[in-house]
Image (cartoon, rainbow, N blue to C red; front, side, top):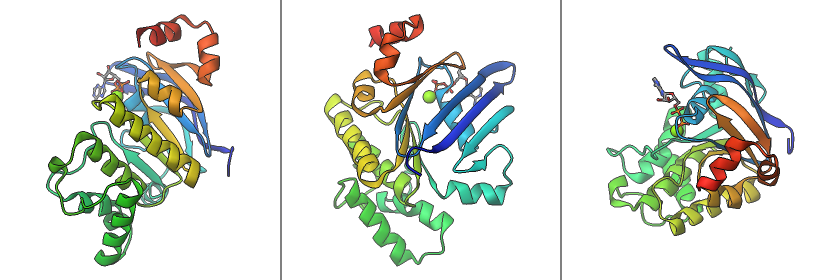
Amino acid sequence: MQGEAILEVKNLHTWYGSQHVLDGVDFTVNAGEIMVILGTSGCGKSTLLKNIIRLYKPAMGSIRLLGQEMTELEEEDLETVLRDVGVMYQYGALLNSLTVGENVALPLEMHTSMTSELRHDIAELKLHQVELKNVYHKFPKELSGGMQKRAAVARAIVMDPSIIFCDEPSAGLDPVTALGLDKLLKTLNETLGMTIVVVTHELESIRRIAHRITYLDRGKVLFTGTLQEALSAQIPAIQEFFLME
Ligand SMILES: Nc1ncnc2c1ncn2[C@@H]1O[C@H](COP(=O)(O)OP(=O)(O)O)[C@@H](O)[C@H]1O
Ligand SMILES: [Mg+2]
């Protein structure tokens, strides 16, 4: 699987009412890579992720994820594909009414018939994997911002997915905590071969983790390739973006 396309998006169009938010997006993510999606605020990054995991159905185009055409799948088959996909939403989105451990175990409860004991043990293991200890019975609000993000990563990987999507994982974190989170994503990628798609606009983060980047501008892909290639491509919008950072 390494190196083959795990996600192929072709000619994707999305509207919110009359607003044409994605205007023919094409890009590919290869198995085993960390792909960073970037672009200015409001250019459609979160919408693109939502389209891929079918939280919001695009109007037109093709999304091939893990060998399945996502735009055509019926609920039941969609569910099967999504079991192999982890998601870390923008703003973390742990449920405040559940403990941290219950949050992490939630996908197991939703998608498997495991006993609660087994769910507990796996969630505990995943918390260890993201270097969180003694937090299972705490509530999200009792954790620091960085720890909440780690818990959200633990939840995203609890089903051992082939690919995870992270929407602005380091937003709101101080630089040191953001560095730690980047290291965690890199470790998951390098040790487990997990494919990771990250939306971020933190230049430091892009430098640290991106194998390739896809630059979105007003709903269109201006560039896909390595950061090095992007910087030497002489595309004004991209140069401006990196100068602003
Ligand atoms: N649910 C929605 N309904 C209507 N408009 C939306 C919705 N979500 C996002 N938008 C609009 O679509 C555009 C792209 O939003 P988004 O995908 O969130 O951008 P990004 O994540 O790149 O900041 C923005 O103009 C935003 O205001
Ligand atoms: Mg967004």
